[in-house]
Amino acid sequence: MKAGIVGLPNVGKSTLFNCLSNAKAQSANFPFCTIEPNIGVVNVPDPRINKLEELVKPERVQMATVDIVDIAGLVKGASKGEGLGNQFLGNIRECNAIIHVLRCFDNDNIVHVDGNVNPIRDKETIDIELQLKDLETVEKRLEKVNRAAKTGNKEAITEKGLLDRIRETLLQAKSARTVLPQNNDEEVLLETFQLITSKPVLYVCNVDENSAVNGNKYVDQVKELVKDEDAEVIILSVGAEADITELESYEERQVFLEDMGLTEPGASVLIRAAYKLLKQQTYFTAGVKEVRAWTINIGSTAPQAAGVIHTDFEKGFIRAEVISYEDYVTYGSEAKAKEAGKFKVEGKEYIVKDGDVMHFRFNV
Image (cartoon, rainbow, N blue to C red; front, top):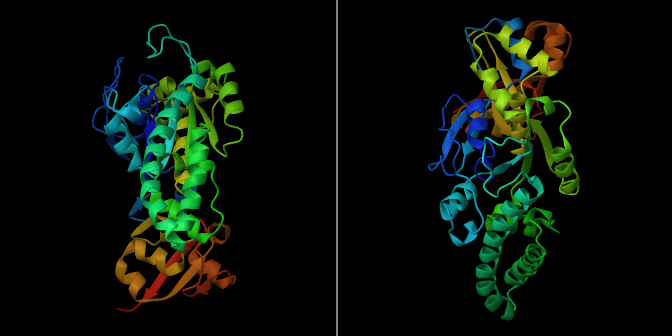
């Protein structure tokens, strides 16, 4: 599962990517400095794994990760191939969620591709290009479906109804994610359409250092604009985050954060938000060899969670032994949690909860 960072050129995408990952994308004051999409595998900050490490004292610790993709800046006309439009749209289509970076700071030394700072206009520029590309996809699909629907084909009639609603929505300059499926058939169909504007989105307002805590007038404009979108807005001073990553020690970074009025780097907040945006959650395995956070889709069953470790675990699944994270920490160990009756044995139907500490029994 991948989240793609998108936005106009020079809004701070590559600098943000550098803050999030160990990869060093080129960051320069001109458009298209990121041509091939850079992919960073980023640890998901989770204080729970630190607590488990403290209790279990394992030989090694493995955190959950999320893939972040830095995609070339988009310009007007991208839907028709302007700039790196076709490449941009292809790269974003392969992502599962969108992190949309909006420039919300004034700085005469960093040129704006449209001449002045206006995050509302910038958002609309990106939205329109993505909507136009989706409209092209929908209309091509409608050409085929219309013929089948005329013959009375029930599946085609269902698909045509959904496509017509999406087309009407896109023509109103609204994104496909605002079209809600009316039943399971439509839900499945919507997935197969692979529309760019149906992907979940997270807005990142890139602000100056002084606005990192409370935002500014630009952030207020963005929040007002997206209030009906069911989308999260995060305030981040990307320049300050870049400075923090350059500091050598944890203590130095904490002093820098305290001076800014923050308790943790904004990048950590963003990574957790991206993880949630991708509808991911974590369960843990905890032993003396390793404490590890495993990533699963929200709603996964115990066998599906086991399959993340190894396909044999899912095929030969017998049962899952489960202690909630809260109980594990309260009693301090697996043995003590068992003594207190907080150890559960679950079968194939069990839906794994975020933070479960699990062992799997299997036979192949």
